[in-house]
Length: 254
Ligand code: G
Ligand code: G
Ligand code: MN
Ligand code: NA
Image (cartoon, rainbow, N blue to C red):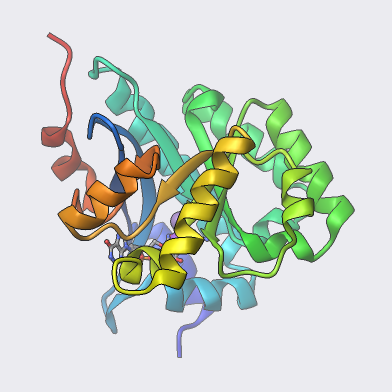
């Protein structure tokens, strides 16, 4: 059993590590941004994957402290890294629906981003599609407030959820991420290929960036580039890596 107290200890003892996975420009293959993904090295249980402990943290309420920690740490680290880069990297951070629905969510985000000194326009918050169907008016208001802070909004795992396109197109969404299940089998499964094409076209019509997740092969990468997908992310380019492994992949200032 993972206790709430164990999660608090994990934060206090810095057992939660942040890894970064590159997102590259489809045309140039230059790294333009990174997604922060957390990992927990628990001294008693060993490595616990985020899909397990985040679900627990959402139930116990620990997600707020965890979410604040990840956001604050990632923003500070990338801001610091950007000082030595020719081109600043953008940062994407996953936000749990439980965080998004918290009444003081926007205030907390604003405070953390200001403290980190990362320019807000470099930060993208990733929310899953299903968060949108819960409470329409509340979500719309929250997203509008985040946009007023100059943050970007990305729809993660797109294509697997249940929100209507009419609704999505009426919200301030800057980016959609095609779920990796479609990328995974699009070259074998015409249905997945059609979904992928359709999402890329939808993004183009609505001036949204489109990211393909889970790109694992050169062939997938070539098809996605051909179809006009702007951003690519996946093991073909890099696994999520600790900060010190990210630095050598970047062009430093002279
Ligand atoms: O890193 P990995 O692919 O194992 O992540 C598994 C799941 O955990 C993904 O759905 C990812 O979005 C989620 N996840 C990873 N880090 C965070 C985080 O900091 N906050 C939230 N809310 N989810 C995260
Ligand atoms: O739900 P979200 O998109 O945030 O999840 C990101 C998860 O996807 C992370 O756990 C990351 O480790 C995983 N991931 C990233 N790239 C690949 C890939 O190319 N293949 C597979 N199978 N998983 C990937
Ligand atoms: Mn994500
Ligand atoms: Na995803």
